[in-house]
Amino acid sequence: MNQISTDPPNKAQIFGDFIPVFPPEQDSLELSFTPSSRPIKQRWRSNRLSAHFMADYFTNFLPIDEDEPNQEKRIKESKAAVSYVANELLENAMKFNDGNSNYKVRFGIHFLNETNSITAVIFASNSIKSGGEDKLKAFIEELLASDTDEMYVRQIERSAEEYGSSGLGLLTMINDYSAKIGWKLETIQQEPLVMAVTTMAQIKV
Image (tube, rainbow, N blue to C red; front, side):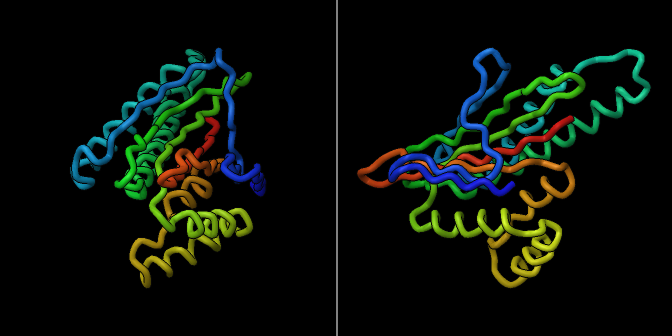
């Protein structure tokens, strides 16, 4: 997970394992939210409900093998993984979205079918607060260059010293769910300048 791709100015910058285009025949689900319509604290419950809904939707695409004795366990574990990842991505998008922009938070899932498994590709997109781009890129570059177990410990120490300095959710996705993480940074408006980030997590189940 070390890809860094920078296009010409005002074009998208890709980091990590990011899939920019999906086959049109693949199933997907996408939701959008207007974060400014309700106070952020009132959104935590709806975020969890949205993540659980996405996990329930995902389980409908899991291949069913009635002769598989661990089928029920697999479905339960897959649902829990998708729910956790979806909730983390959506909460981060809501938390760090620029409330001064009119950009809606986008949240969705794609399904990549393979012979004996399905990869759930979950994403969330939000605008970036002024001055947040450099901090985000520094975090991404550190994550891509680090041992994620060691970085997890560092982030816990930083969180104790600096409120809001975390990233633990993303590291948990990688360490506990073997997720592949990617980002796309892009300029969506020039005057005034508005940038957006799409964070993507791929988990195979």
